[in-house]
Each structure stands twice: as C-alpha cells, then as structure tokens.
Image 1 (cartoon, one colour):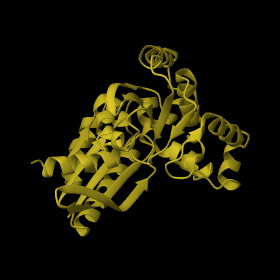
Image 2 (cartoon, helix red, strand yellow):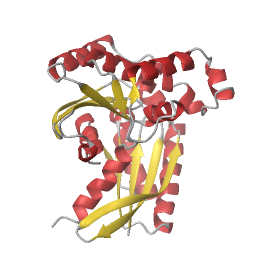
Image 3 (spheres, one colour):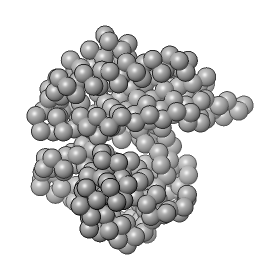
Length: 293
C-alpha cells in the first residue's frame, strides 16, 4: 500500500510517495520517492498578489506529472496542500479548479494554523525527551510556524507571514517581526533550558553543511558561524564555489536569519533538525484517517 503527499509551497512543490508498513497494530511509513520542483510561486504571490499565467502553466504541468507518477506507483490515497503563496494569490481558487480539471487532483489551500497542525501530525513529540522544553521553528518561503512543547505536549502555536522568499522580495513587514518577537516574549520565556527544533528545507541544508549527525543538535554559535560563512560569498559564488542549487543559494540567507533571530529572542542555544516537514505530516494524517480503530 502506498500513500502520496503533495506540498505546494512558496519556493518549491514536493511529491512524497511513501510505502505503508503494517506491523500488528502499529502502522508506519517508509519514504519511497521524493520529488522537488523549484517553481518559486511566492515571487508572484507576494509581489503581485497573483500567480502569473506562466507559473500557473508550470504548476499545472507539474501536477499532471505528479498525477501520472501516483498512478504508476499505484498510490491508494493522497492529500495535496498549498500554503502561503496560494493563500495570498487572488487567483488561487481558480488554479485549484484548473488543477482538478486538468490533473484530477483535489487541492486544499490551507491556512497558517492548519499548516502548522499538519506538520505536527508527524508526531515529532514522540522523539522528544519528555522532561525537556522545546521551541519548534518551521521556516518556509512565505510563513514561519512557531510552537512550544513542554513535557511532550503541544502548549501553544502561531503562524507568521515571514519566510525566506517573502524577505528576498522585500515583502516582510516590520510589524510582523514585532508581533513574532512579542509572541516569543509572551509564550516562551517562562520555560527554562529551552531547546529548538528546526524544520524546513533550509535548516536541513544548513544542518548538512555543518556536518550534523542524526539526533545531535546544532548550536546557535555554529549556525551563526555558518550563516556568516555563507553570507561572505556572493550569490554567484554560493552556487559556483559552494555548490548550492540556485533556488537554495539565495533563500538560505534570509531563512537562516529567521532561525537565528527567533533562537536569540527565545534564548535557545541549540536546535535539533529531525528532517521532517509538511509531507511527512500529510502521510501521517492519511494513516490516521485510514487506520482509525
């Protein structure tokens, strides 16, 4: 049995096809195929409040390709979500209808809190030390989701319109930064010895560049040092000398700024990077839907 998850983000569009494993009453999944297409829908949505005809055509072609792959892989259930770029695009719902017509894919444009809830569905809290307190930081192209976990329980969460693409396009607002700082002050400072949990493509890349080992955190100092190192190179050299993909080389800088800023506000000295995201949460939601007792 296979399930599929589609994530239409501000920077990239992803398809995860996962094999479902039943072991008695335990149901889990193993990633089979992950495809990422860097469409950069956020450049249109955040600047023009609309997805252009060219990007719409590229997105529909991508969805048709994903539909064909799901058919070939004999996917039995799927869920497709679009996040902040499609939330802000005036023609988002029209594109949803076009995708349904051309690719036979039902697409849900999810609100910020719903996006956060899907990410948490990956049950990251099960891998946490229950006696510790954590600040969960998920940075995307258009939004950042923050959550506080204490003793394995989700205490509070909030989505903010701040992301790597949004900052690159100078569409981040001072008042949103101020709101996020106040939220951290009000909801985080009562928790002692707080560790971070970071998700998103950019923190995954930073973790790999830092030679991070699974289950070990990366320190604030190491992340700051890596940010300074990357920022010392031009965009061209980050691509040609450091070997970053062109769609990663620019957005990784503002994304790192968000992680570092939130960690500084919260007094977080280290951050764990479990390499899960929206698509993992979607697969888990499909499991829960289909295997409800």
